[in-house]
Image (cartoon, rainbow, N blue to C red; front, side, top):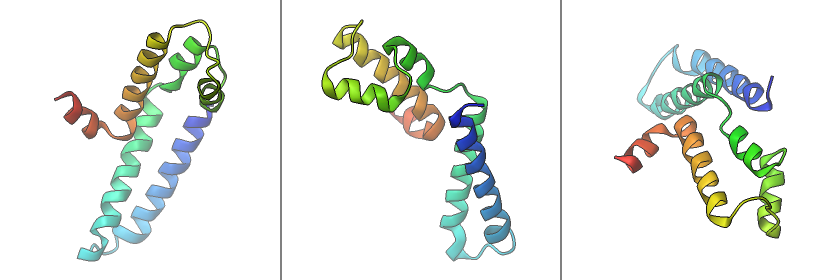
Length: 112
């Protein structure tokens, strides 16, 4: 199981516990923000579990093992095997795939 799936499941567990303990018993006006945050976390976790890890294609294209390794290579100007434009396009594709999981409404508005 990937690290992303493990993190998503942990996030889902926390969100479910918070929802069950804090929100369901009584939803006064002061809990609306908590309810919205919990619903958002649940949505992210569910999308994370059902969609492939968006970093996979980027890491493969850049021949790196992790996003932190890739970030270090970019900072050092040490990404080989592709042009700067290709790297930019790969990063944009990754960002859009990540936003589809973490903030799909933002992505929809941006594309809209």
